[in-house]
Structures are given as structure tokens and as C-alpha cells.
Length: 125
Image (cartoon, rainbow, N blue to C red):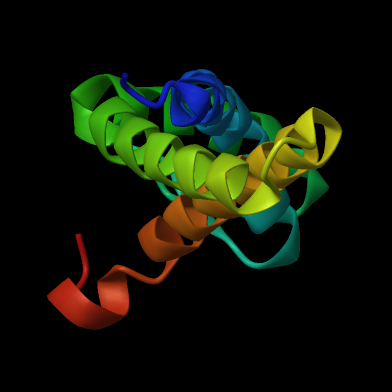
């Protein structure tokens, strides 16, 4: 007889992976706004957005990056992070949810930070 006890864990982990992907993509504009407030964020076809006045421009600019490939990168990393977070939480769904959302926020924030410092690695754009 097959052991089906791990099937429930995988189902929860797969749900967390989907949640992690969606949450990371949804949080990306907010992360871009936070990075613009704290440091700067490159607005496509424009200058760097800085401070509170540029937070809206950064959030809107992040949508451009998401449309041109960022959804795949952020979504996949958020899904992997959500899957790992759920598996590490065991059967505690509340802990799995919290960990998944934290990982998704970190993925979105790291994506925004990487765009803001990309100039140092590839030159001015």
C-alpha cells in the first residue's frame, strides 16, 4: 500500500508556491517605491526616481520591468521560496503562510534593489 501522508504536505507546499509567486509579483511595485524612497530606482525611459516624490514613478516604472520579463524572474523565485517556506513549516499552515509572505516580500525587495544598483555592474543605461 502506498504511503499518502506526504501528499498533503506537497499539496500545501504547492499552494504556498503559487501564493509566493503571486505575492512576490504583487509586492514588486511596493518594493520599488520603498527602494526609491530609501535610495533610488531607475524609471524606464527616464531618470532615477528618488525620495517620496518619486515613489509613485518607481512603482509605475516597476510595472514596465515586470511586463518585460520580471514577472518570470520574480514569480519563479517567489514560488521556490514559498515552496521551501511551506516545507520548512511542516503542518503548521499559519507559520507556512507567514514564511511564504516574508519570502515573497524579500524576493520583491531584492529584485528592486538589484535594478537600482545594476548600473554599477553593466554601466550607465
